[in-house]
Length: 532
Image (cartoon, rainbow, N blue to C red; front, side):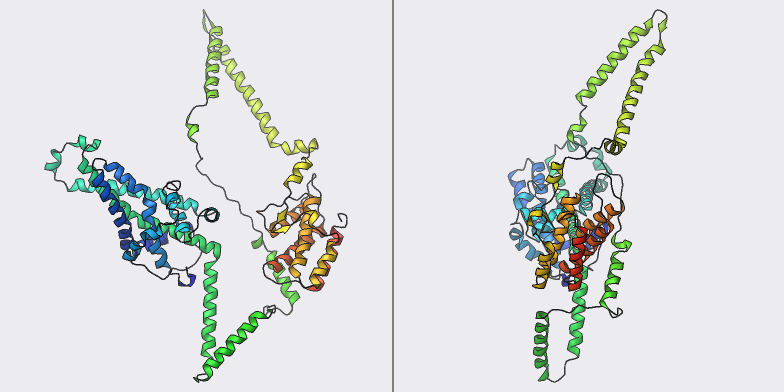
């Protein structure tokens, strides 16, 4: 897929905007996609009707079950059309077996009832992924938009049902009243008329073929929107446009002489090749006078609230019910039986010749409710204040359990104490002077992480980024807890500064100055003086 040939505007869209875009594209290219879905399905339904004339329901069920096989051709067409290489209906039909070569068995067995089929199928058809690579890819895609894909499937099912009911109602409205008065409706309702069942099969086939383009293209647009968000296609296209404008500007400045133009082209290509081999100097904005001011400006932007904003979202959702939850538990039945027996015994005791003693009869249930309330209140208070109770009794987690939870690698770096040299700072400076800047600063960074994990009991998970680890250190420095080793302000500042320099070197390829590395080593010796 060539991103520069994308026929729609590449921008971040919400899942519902992506579905709207899919509906608009499906309306535009509906007829060819309708035909490439309908023709293979009709070719299958015809032989089934010939071989099994007395079982129309099973024939339609076979076509419905093979929907993922028929969905691939419309998906193939819209993917080529969206990236500037349209495919005709005839060419798509010729590619039927080639498009159904990958994971066809899985799609008609274990994945057939997947509610996100339209969202997941591009991974198989377009990326040709299967096995572990497909599972990893689906896991990334499903972090967003999977809910919208499920609602898209439910909407498609309801649309097919409504259209089928509407088709029967429309046929009924065209039947004259004189004819409808003489029709025996009982066999028709019971499904005892084969002709009517085959007519309904044909209507179902046409309705499925009519709805399929909207369902397939909407799911494909959800997939495209997720890839734009993950891979930054909008940014890539903007950079491509900048490069093309720059190239056009360079071409307009070339000399008009025929003999000089090829020579200038050769010279320009040589200059670009030499420039790509030489190290690129650091570029600074024209408004900044010195590198120190630029660094201060970057630190100010990174310290702003936009880079440290945390949002919490809450809402209602349906609870996931298991099939076993529909049954009444056995213990609940026995509890009610015991309550009824207990109440009946109290009623017999309270019953005398003068009548029923209602006070004695109600006293026992009220007593039971009071005891239940007291026990529930005690449990709630214990859970609500369990942290204070644990702190009051000086309870601490088992040290062996903590040690087992400590990670061995973070961000691809070995953070075990045994992997560090005896003199960390001397090894860092040696690597730095030898020209291996990434290894030198990486050693200082992983030594810092190792000391924070081993000596300060920080538990950095694989899901955290470097910035989030630094934020945890800063958070403990601001709000220390009694059971954890406190972090000093110089250590928190050092971790923040080291993390920023490591990120600039690892991701932006901008190494710090030599003097700054020496300062970092000196600060490391000061903050970890008691741990070496």
